[in-house]
Length: 339
Image: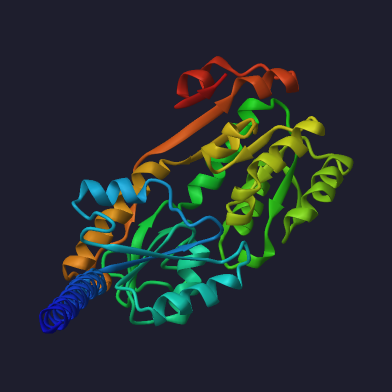
């Protein structure tokens, strides 16, 4: 009997010891997991943060591959944070403020309005952007060579670009005398409408200007242009128009109006022609600026580069539907031809 009681107590002690050992093992494992998670979190917190400021979808096409080429790999040695304006210009203010509060080490934007608005929100966080308007004339920078402040990037603005687009459109549509213009008054601080008016006057071409703030206003604008005698649609640079390229191309085609725009995505969407900077190379340069700033460079000391390469793109299918014969000299000069 004593032996049986002793054996029972011994077994209970062994069970208690096993249970304590198991609990201790679980606690050790939890401690290791928590420690590892904490280390990962601390490591991520120390990585440079790049804030993307975008109009809609959280992407600046081509930026991440360009950063990778420079050894800046998301999740390894940098982190990406993105805030969208929700397809509203006023949304850029809120989105920028959110990035500043995180905080981020540099803000990257694609359209000029994003960089323009971001500059009004923060004077300390570096901003790298593509500038479509005149950065000097708009007061964004002190000079192209030494911008000062916290904004730098690349620009493709030149007064001659508007003239070039109008001349190319006249070569395509012989005898054209009236051109419909899509302009967004929300970005009236950009110089394109005034450039267009001035150059059209020199060329002796009448303009039918329609101010459009929202996508649902495009249908009436294009229809009215046709009714008012416009023989083509000239789309001024604007991020909302860029995101509505397919809609604009379809509306113009339905009215038998050729479209001249500033980005090749318009011809890819069905517009007739576009003359633009090489956006792929511009985005690559944005990545270079980001890399320099993360290395310690001050944005105010980084010269704003001017685009060196421009592309003419044509859509042959659209030309056939419109009954237009593309002049051979334009075909030869075209950098992109969409069948």
